[in-house]
Image (cartoon, rainbow, N blue to C red; front, side, top):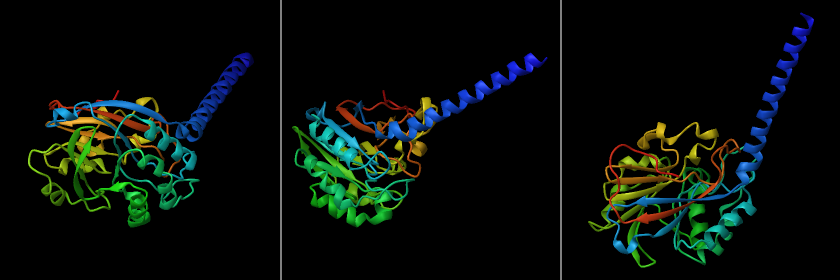
Amino acid sequence: MGLIRHLLRSRRQRLAWGVFLAALAVAVYGFVIEPGRLVARDYTLAVRGLPAACDGLRIDVVSDTHTGSPRNGIDHLDRWVRELAASDAPLVLMAGDYVILSVLAGSYVPPDTIAQHLKPLTARKPVYAVLGNHDWWKNGSAVARAFSAAGVRMVDNRALPVDVAGCRFWLAGLGDLMEGRPDVGGVFAGIPAGAAVVALTHEPALWPKLPAAAALTIAGHTHGGQINPFGMFSPRRFRADSHALRGAYSEGGRTLFVTPGIGTSILPMRLGVPPEISRLTLRAVAAPTGRPAPLHP
């Protein structure tokens, strides 16, 4: 009996140590390694009404950069700026939340400093951006001024034609749903009937409120769930009009794309959702219809 008790106790101890070491490894990876990674993922999106001249247009998308969060300082900012500047995509869209408001062990970086480091990118290609809720909570006007001075074209509640690589479409920039007071009616009133429209906003929950003219909507905000080990929280479990986490969703001939972002918020951890540059290729074909379905690779 004594031997059996000893063996059981030893087995329980080994199991306890194994669980502890596994949890420690996951924590180190999530807090130290993954937030410092940077991946570029390719997505192909069908866009209803896109002119034939726009077929194959490449657009790079980033969001929720939150410069100053742990493992995501100026060096990381310079890294993704270099990646975007070197990319063959002729256009960059940024979907908000460039500063940090609250993240454990983070260090606030002023928008003027962030903007200065964007200049190598804006010198190479057009960059359009909207603000996110963190930008507004800190000082949205200051972020917009700094970015504009660095050559970023701020499009909150503005619509304007974009001519790039022989392609022409209308970009509809919408203010953040939480803080930016999106003027959906005013923005779309200035777009010619029948024009191809790409909408850019921070909060994907705005998507159901947009008119059918918005064939493609690009958003961020969710961080892809930020902590999603082994894909446990698959986008297939969520409706796109309420809790779209990441990737592409199609419904009624319209498409929503949610980029998982680069930085962190509140908890400085990413697990199963590495910082991402989303590389979109647009196809001038009818968008699929039916229930929302994620199309990410």
